[in-house]
Figure (tube, rainbow, N blue to C red):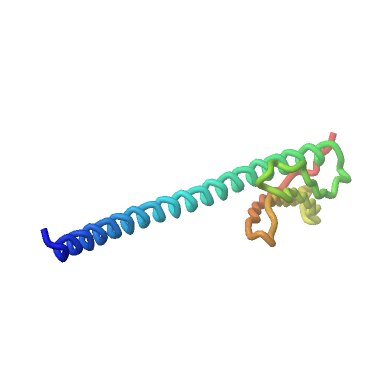
Length: 134
């Protein structure tokens, strides 16, 4: 074999190796990108579920407090930190007496996360509760 032919083969092999490396790198990059996207989606879904659970706890607390006291006006409740990922959990309960009926308008808002970090989830629930007390 001549030296020119050996160089040509080496160049062809180098191009094939470089092409394989490019394909492998692209495949890995897409896999990592997909995994990171899925992780963000799962984190958002978990935060939404925890916000809904917090909202449910706030509704139950509002009903219990209204049942216990006719003077209850609502409150803002900040539970202990839920876990290392989610900060600044808060439940706000507002009670408005309806002047035209014997019911209260109850608004419960639950929020988890911090606005500055772009990860705040908030849910609200509004219902009427009769002002009948024992």
